[in-house]
Length: 540
Image 1 (cartoon, one colour):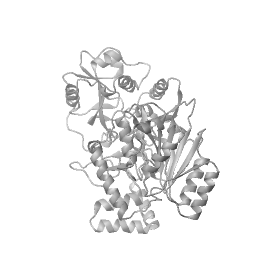
Image 2: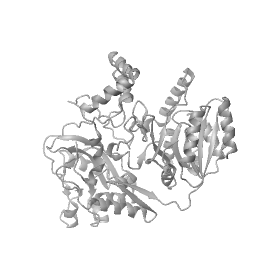
Image 3: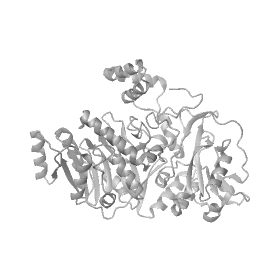
Image 4: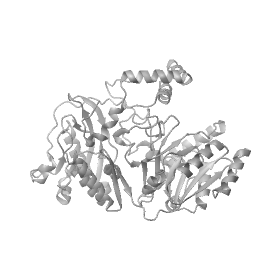
């Protein structure tokens, strides 16, 4: 499906990346012939009636794609709210909205669905402190047929500045409008501007209501012509002269000035596997434009003569090699190195990670050094050039899952989330940046409960509990040969099961609902792949 050519619709470009059925089956056939062992594993699981296993193996072989068929819209016209008025910014600015207690900003091409007005009135009545509420939408095709759900996460000012994921349909209390007013110099971005100003004063005053409130018909009415410059102006105001804005279509990247970049300490745990370590070290040296960094290699009982000789050579070249003997404890090794790090910025890097572009650390540091930000993650690609990590989603795949895993490495991502810097619940420690002071303030990694797995998720959630945001920076791109250095055995599996139990015990309620991922996505499938089942849905 091709969308009209307007940067305001770049948020939805992911639908244009979907291959048609013929191309999809041709690619599947070619991959099956290229990897017959994996194809046979898919067939064997399907023949045995193990649908979940077959689906998971098929995703690994053929990659992930969006299969997001929206449920039918509720029948009937949108009802008239007793205390609610729907109006465009022009109508509001002209004073033509009357005495309504709730005002819903809208724009051409957007309409409330049946039941939306009642839901909004009930939400505001139940929560007196709310100043603004936004919900989800359904994209309509040229014939008015629902073709795509627009499912939004919780309010995230960074995401909103990068990509207008909320859109123009937002309900405000009249008191908020009277107090803050709309900025007439920002055509098309009035709602975003008002949300940002309101949330800057009280972040709890903005709420996402996870239900369909409106339809969006981009084929009938594109955003106003002033949309793109208005959004850029909004982002530049936010930076207040301490950075600049990079634009690619409708997606913005806020690059923040760092007048005095601090020393960064790159921490790499390893045990033998010299081919991985060498590739990692050489890539970091060749593709890191940060002005000052040190590298600490945590050596966990390497035995191979080639590895020992390489470590000795690294030590002679100024890289610190820190002996970490004993049973493998990823968290403890990183904690020990962090305690000896000289850098004000800690960057944890797996030995199976390879830097691809020289600006990866600078892009992560620009976020990590903000006072309100804790952990920062990067976009990681696997050996097949597909997404390995795009942030961590809680409550999916049985516990946690990497966002957009197995999607193409060039994918835009659902609502441009593989291009726009945004908030997530957690990021992987395979490449994680955090200020040393914040890391130490929360006690570092929990090496007792999470020696190997979930120490990164636990760290991010403890940083969040301390008031810090966890950010995903898609502009920082590296490769990750995940688990290339891991060896599973019965002891490792028992340890993993214990760490699963520990994560559930500590963060059970938080794992049940990830505010940065919509509850309407199927938690049993890969992230952003398909919706929960609804009556009349066709399985694909």
